[in-house]
Length: 183
Image 1 (cartoon, rainbow, N blue to C red):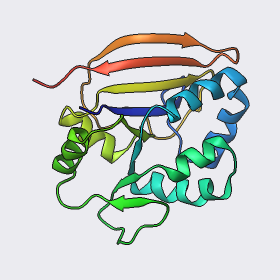
Image 2 (tube, one colour; image 1 turned 45 degrees about the horizontal axis):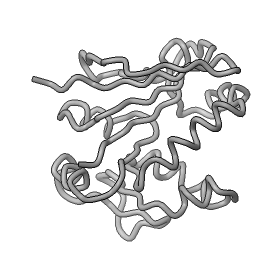
Image 3 (cartoon, helix red, strand yellow; image 1 turned 90 degrees about the horizontal axis):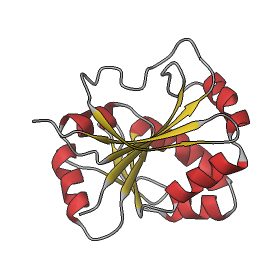
Image 4 (cartoon, helix red, strand yellow; image 1 turned 30 degrees about the horizontal axis):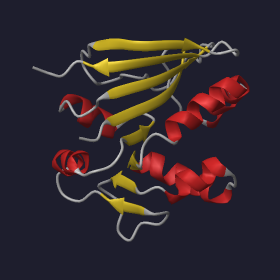
């Protein structure tokens, strides 16, 4: 069975991206070892899961980039959860139709590697509540952003089992968790 892995970059006070200013704060901490970590994660799955906002943002940026990371992300199949987008989608993407939970369960049953979701939002909340997330890969950056959406905002009580940690040269810390399945 394929795993669903969620990757998020977060400030030490729990704020996740979305605003340009947030990403301007993060990029100076993308040291060589952080970038290697992100590349390893990018080459682990064979497909991406995305909500509408991530899809729209990534689809504007990644097709304009070059290099092995861009080639990888641009060529991967992408499954997009959205109530507002219409087919056909661009950028090697397919709209998840019908019930998101049952469709992602089907994707998990297909042969292949893992499914990766970048960022956290409504899709993450739905997958977490239904026990579909197998791993969280969190990069915690050594600054407090002060305001903005929080990493587990509106997701209720979530118990996580720590699997691994790694500290990078820039002060970023990788936290690898496994959510404990709901009863």
